Amino acid sequence: MEATMSFDEHCRIGGSIYQGTIQGNMVAVKKAKHDITNELRLLQKVNHANLVKFMGVSIDTDEYCYLVYEFAENGSLDKWLTPKVPCSSSSINIRTWDQRLSISLDVANGLQYLHEHTQPIIVHMDIRTTNILLDSKLQAKIANFSRAKPLADSSMLKADVFSFGVVLLELLSGKRAMETKKRMILEDEERREERLRRWMDPNLKNSYSIDRAISLATMARVCTWEKSSSRPNMAEMVFNLSVLNQQSSEALDTSWTDGLETQESIQILSLLGCPSLWPSSGVPNLIRGVSSQRWVR
Image (cartoon, rainbow, N blue to C red; front, side):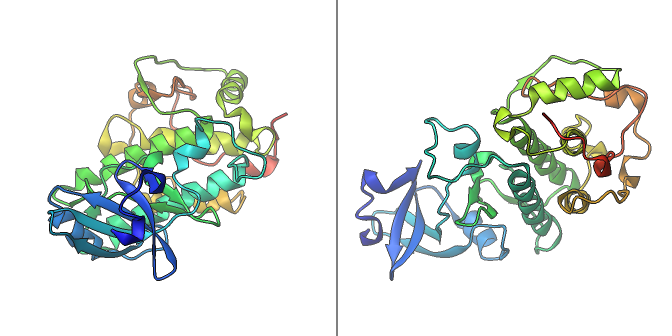
């Protein structure tokens, strides 16, 4: 294929994705041999600033299909959170709290669109940092719809919510996600904050207040509750992230946390080796004391 120099290895972005040029514009081309009928059907129904734009498809005589997407100049989010090689000083680096919070909101907006504004409703089923791309302005875009499905059961939506919570944990910690059986309850508030400080990505340095970090950690926590019905929906996450993004001390709508059992706040699946950060006495508000501006030192 001329656009990708016949899929030369130098043009490979990762996996079966190649960088190419069509009419002078940079594009990403996915080379696929499996049945892409379902993926195509869904891609043709979506259009949102926080989803990678699908531009077209070509079917070759050798039975390969080539899906053409907009090109995201800064690649996947995981490359910047957990780089295999040190980033050069001249390259972009997601080292600030505001950048990571903005990326969180972008992904939440993209998921809310899929969950509420498509017909049929679409469940992505593969939200992870490798499938979140960043353009030249660090705007996040959800990519890879190979596992996406039309909604068959409302509980499917909460699978995306869980995965989104894992992404939040990775943004907070700068570590890859992993499941662990370790569980812990930190009853003392000061110890809780100290534990969070130690767990946060050191690359963030002093760009965040501990109260805002606690707020985002809480959002990640409720998204990853084992009981799927207790997880929020993406509209609620967009609202809460928008408030946090605006650095507002306005109280949030936490009505969706009503009725949660105390035991549920104890039995949380820990990710990234981070134990439960909250006491077992109840469910916390999502945004806690952001007006106090206690900065990490």
